[in-house]
Length: 166
Image (cartoon, rainbow, N blue to C red; front, side):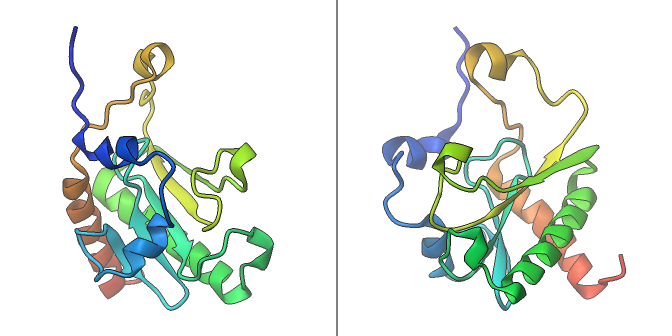
C-alpha cells in the first residue's frame, strides 16, 4: 500500500463540523501566511482554500458574515467580482492554468461546506488534471504545499496591485 501524506487536513479531520466561521476567524488575525489571507479590500477579501481541490484554490468572500446571496450589498458584490478577476490574473501569473472554475455553492444541499458566510471559489484547472484517483479512491493529490502556493500567488498579486493594467 502506498501512503499519501496530507498533514494540512488534520484540522478538518479533527473538526469536520467546523466550530465557528473559519473565514471570520481568519479575519481576526493579521493578514499573511498564518491565516492565508492574500488581500483584504474595503468590503471583501481573498483567502486560500485550506482544503483545496487544486494548487492555487482561492476563495473571495465579503468581510461581513452573511450567507444569503440576496442580502449581499451592491458594493460587496462589485468588490467580490473585482477580486475574483484579480484572483484569476494572479493565478494566471503564478500557475499558467488552462482554464478556471468560478462559482458558489448556495446552501448545504448545493454542496456548501460553509453555509453562513458566502464565498466564491476561484479554482485553476489544467487539461488532464483529473485522473483515476478521485474517481476510484476518492483521493486527490495536491502537488504543492499551501505555504508555497500562498507565497507564489502573493508575489503575482503584489505585481498586479502595483501595475493594475497588467
